[in-house]
Image 1 (cartoon, rainbow, N blue to C red):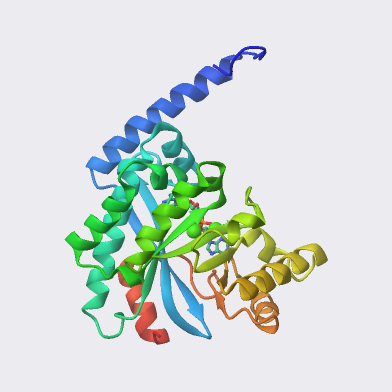
Image 2: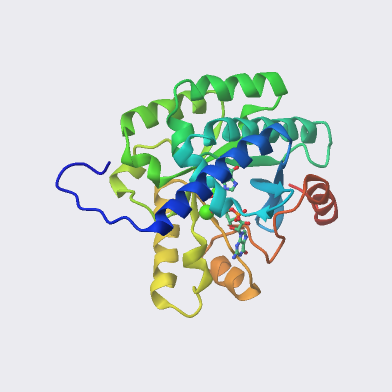
Length: 276
Ligand code: C2E
Ligand code: CA
Ligand code: CA
């Protein structure tokens, strides 16, 4: 399958992996039909106020228990199941946005939704987003799509065209896991982005690893010179937050404020904390 002039070894564990994958795929399809997926929400703060949330997918499997998206999302990408799953996420997120709009304390919140490369590149994606906004009544300007650099391995012009069209309706874009992928800096100025997210792998050791500290400072400088908002993710300690603050990064998310939580808990958190 890898092509000519390629030598591969087969070992029995590969068979086990393949059947595990097949089983997971069957379970995921069933899970979608049986309503086993749920969105959790993690607050994002800017200058100390909760201004947005990131929607993060959770799967409650009756036998497997809680399955982490880090394991099933890559598989959903490979099998193509990310298309119906991603559409489910988009719809659930937009329904939530529309619901917040009716509550004065939550109406100003934005919601970030993760979109995988395959989902973004599928035919009709732009129309799908617009149709979902229309059917749920969610405001386009409250929706932010988080894309990853993996997207840029493919047709960049097409990517720019899709983004620009959605942007013309008010949808925002964030580049997730920035600095961990394949992005070339020359793409950065071509993409109609609103935001960069500093990957948590750089934030984790920002106080002890001088390389991570300079990467974080560099991303902040880059964002500011390109006119992009920069959000740090994976902030777990006061010290990390103070470092970011000192370097003029006021937007962040992480366990320091809250883990991703169910919608009701998120609403209670915003009410207690005070929203934008
Ligand atoms: P991500 O988009 O980079 O999301 C951030 C991950 O970091 C989340 O993991 C979140 O729970 C976790 N996190 C947040 N704050 C902290 C912190 O302070 N410390 C640490 N150590 N971790 C923190 P999660 O929810 O397990 O999601 C993993 C990945 O799965 C996401 O990474 C994203 O790539 C993917 N994913 C999740 N939901 C969706 C979805 O609806 N669609 C797509 N395409 N991908 C999704
Ligand atoms: Ca994300
Ligand atoms: Ca990330």
